[in-house]
Length: 257
Image 1 (tube, rainbow, N blue to C red):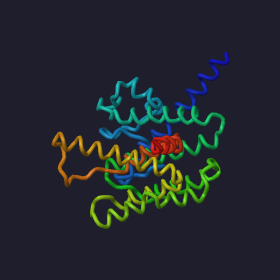
Image 2 (tube, rainbow, N blue to C red; image 1 turned 90 degrees about the horizontal axis):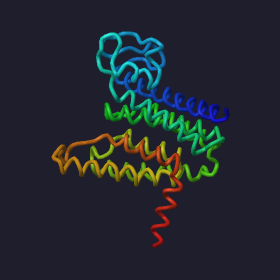
Image 3 (cartoon, rainbow, N blue to C red; image 1 turned 90 degrees about the vertical axis):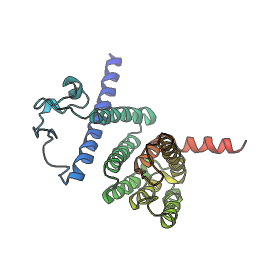
Image 4 (spheres, rainbow, N blue to C red; image 1 turned 120 degrees about the horizontal axis):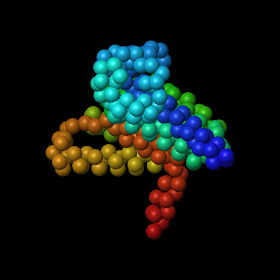
């Protein structure tokens, strides 16, 4: 009996995370189109069919419909399913990491919701809307109480640890970093503190640099081609939300040898 209750609780958190990330996918799809994000029925992008409740169940609807619209038979982007699955896994990971500390779980989920929305919009449009920077800063305010071990001074230092160097580079090398990336680094610094943003810096630059080298080696891009850096910052921040301090401590431990 206890096992069934625990299974239902984990299932609840999975579907909660899947629902939240599904909303993030909707926001990332509608904002560039100029559509409302909080109002308006979900619809098929191919035929415009309004989706019913049975077609809006995270993950399950995609699997039961075999990835196709019930109206026109058009393919539903596999990305939608991947986003929902990722959301469910993230929610379970937050519960596994923080356990009964529900304030930490909710702040983590809110931050992850914003991060995945920023990553998707920046990937699609190479633009990060200012409203997300403000929301991340507000999430950082909530994190002051949820994560008191990160002091306010550490958060203020974190605001400039990455954003200022990015700004300096952008001034001397036009088109290296966009204003949205710099403001995102500032907001993430307040959310995570200086230790967390150091983790973000190393992970994001390593991942972005590796991708650029791989694309250049395969002649899929030239030296003047640009990539969206926001998704790399968001991915690094997601790791830092869970284990930023531990990663930095590990790096500092290696530096001693």
